[in-house]
Length: 82
Image (cartoon, rainbow, N blue to C red; front, side, top):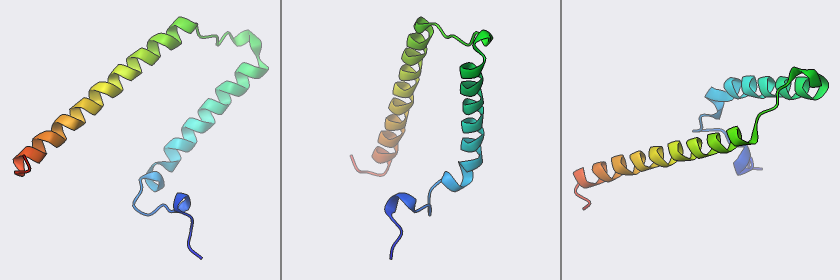
């Protein structure tokens, strides 16, 4: 019986970054737990900050993707595919 595709880890970076992911999950879980159990901490985030961060992250992703396409196009034209 073969392992399902979503459980195969050969050739992925999951094996190398699992502990980073675990640290982030523990950190996020601790913040959520303290926010739920200790209301006097004041961890409220304004809605406008969430909107601004969403726009900033979206722009960063667009520029990073555009840079990747430019690099691919440059490499593709150097190989004579154009």
